[in-house]
Length: 192
Image (cartoon, rainbow, N blue to C red):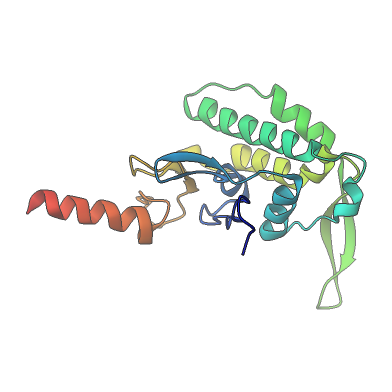
């Protein structure tokens, strides 16, 4: 339980079916208020661990609180790139800058069947390198996916994004249990 005056640690929503969109969803609307779930470097590292890219905090001791600022900048860049690409425009400058800073490489590692597989590695020596897996994931989202399937929740109060992987590509809500149910109940009441 947090001490009086300290904010409660918010759980990250991982419902977008793509890590770059899940990262965009670290900004949420709670009771009508826009809330940024990233309030510290530790929050960024918690999100990365939740996404499957754990980072040793010791590697960042030279850059206190810089990771948060750069992560928020990357989130804004991803959001801007998605909006531009969906509008038929493109501006790759900021995205390419982040990709250049990611500094990843491939490494051969043994697999469980006695063979080899390729694994991408990042050396998290700088905040930009820590953000490398996310940046590469965002670039992959834009370059290798159908942009029509990147959608924003249709709930008027919701600002969350998702990638529509449904068979008919008619997903409308970030989460059926919350926004979907709320809208279906509202529609039912309106008809009745």
